[in-house]
Image (cartoon, rainbow, N blue to C red; front, top):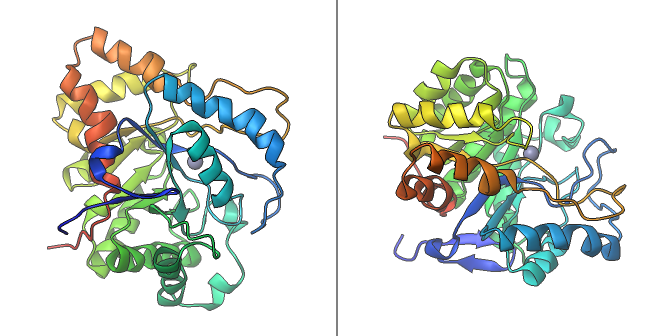
Length: 314
Ligand SMILES: [Zn+2]
């Protein structure tokens, strides 16, 4: 494409405008509650709790946050846009359905429709915006249930994501914890649909037991996301980052927290989404990571992963 873009909730930006990015976070979600397409967040409470969290990460040097809450468990793109405008943090939202959590956030019609029909719904959000807001998804987010094998409905969601990718160029972030056989089943479906692994983000790769499989996926071109980083577990991602460096795979690595800016029960803002930039990266630097390697992980990789571009196999 002549003029590559990344799509945010405030519209398209040039890839070089994205900046330092957290590739897997949540601002707003209703996870654990019944499925809904119209979450009833209190707008004032959202501003009181979520906005300071986003202003906090901006002050820490984070320019962009990828919001992984799908439709049915709390996606609210207009509130994301308001929060993005007020905080100046770029926010990417998504299209797709979350097939983990035993499919409780998968709509009934997904069982009846084909993968192509589901893809058509997601492509429509890309082409026309989400529910009349004009806000477009910046990536595809789906989930699959763990452990494998892939269920029929989850395999259909993966296939729909691959078809959507080919029609839109949106990257696919797929929740795939613990069981590496699920990842290979997903990559097989991508291959059948003619999609290159570089269109696919292995979400929750830091929870996978078989690290050799993670390395093999990275060598095949997949994005490897360590996204369960928090103040209590920094030693683990620190070790994993060194493993990736030793294997020459820092060019495939993404780092994030999978934390939430907001929760209904909070009475005051919390300091969230901060451990990577405040703790992990300084520790990596102190232990010998070069500044260019830090920038590769936090800026260059997210920019490449989320640039809108069809990545066909072969
Ligand atoms: Zn998440």
